[in-house]
Image (cartoon, rainbow, N blue to C red; front, side, top):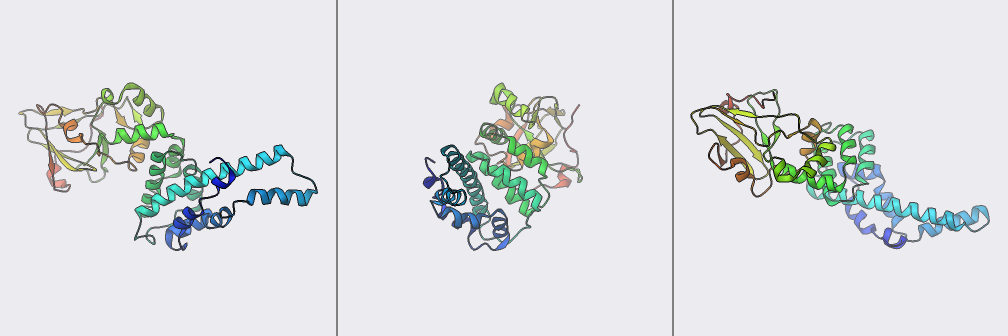
Length: 304
């Protein structure tokens, strides 16, 4: 945005997001003041008006350095508001037809979310924040403020790297009713490069010290799921197979939480990546859903 006029010219976008201000999304928009923002930003000269108010109150012209600060602050806040509008637009599109569904998060959570989402300049960051809100409305409390804090610290480069990493992961189901499905990386460091892995380890999303493997007995199978569907990984050998898949890489608890916001297992080659050279395990696409009885042998990852 090169000037104040361009910075405040997005009134139509806000109007489209806020709509009539009804339902769950309308309540959140009202809490954030997006409706009032529309009223303010539809006037492209409101900064100049502030300067005139200053001159009226103090009986003298506003100093240039103060005027520069006013303009700079206005532009900064406008950019943050633009980011929030982009995020909110994605949420609105994802929830079209069910705007009234869900539960409005607590004010403290909304305040923390507002601060993080308003600083999301990258499209991947904005999509993660939008997915977070979409999920939180349907599952209150799933994402505590701590997770919002981690997400707010991620920059565009980390968001892109983690989204790509998750595209090579799958959800693994277990027969243990107390254990939720977990995210298993299916590709190791050689595919992503040490620089990318270092970046994600430094962000607290991955770990190199939790070497997890799955032991598949003779005739056993495990079901995994990604964006592209459900897959069966089976053992055709006459002995048990210990599958490490991604070597020493695993997601941290924080990484697992944020992975819920990504398209897990969406890469085009996910099936071939899981199968490797096809000489040890077999992978096939299945239409069935998870059946605990078929997984009685399997209780989760083994972490020495």
